[in-house]
Image (tube, rainbow, N blue to C red; front, side):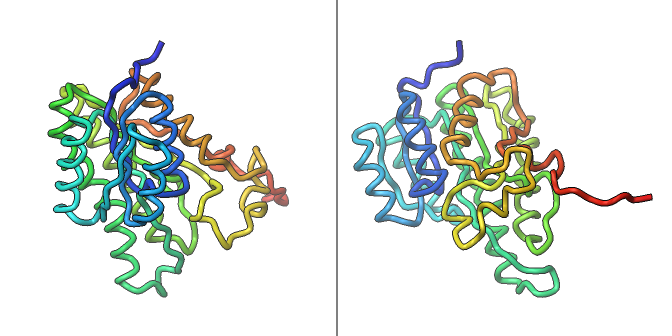
Length: 251
């Protein structure tokens, strides 16, 4: 039996749509009280209204330390100390290393990596007050391997993976576990405009994943994987183990 989430307070970033919204629904379904945060206010407010008293919405730009402080204070005032943090907010930026401008690089790092650090930094005192908890950082298969023309995204997601390990060591004696999830191609707005079938055709499981499949892993980490911290949990259709695309002889 895993731990119960009845009455546990969670904060989820990037929660207005896609994987984040599915995470909020899954946590509420498991009994948690959830503060959904995002910069997409209309969609975030609609999600909170859909879920009733178990959820609330707060605007949060994850690159702002003040907005993080305000979001944590609002969560504590609404529901109590935070026991679960899901650092889900992220963007993807395409471009070769010689071609990408500094502003695009910096924005990708600021949202994906610094935003994750700020979440851990700001929520830790509340989680200690709650008596411990679980932090889940959403990385990517790009945190496990390289991709051409995605240098900023890859760097940020490898950074999230490393930060997860440092956090697991630092927070261990506070009863706080820190793990990362590494999704492959998932059917969310992030892959809009890409050929989903082409993305998955060489994977062992030759389809794009659904947000609910990542949420299932999230809930497993929080409720069941109570002896795991600092580790990577991969939801990718087998993408990182290799390609089914045939290749010719090499020698």
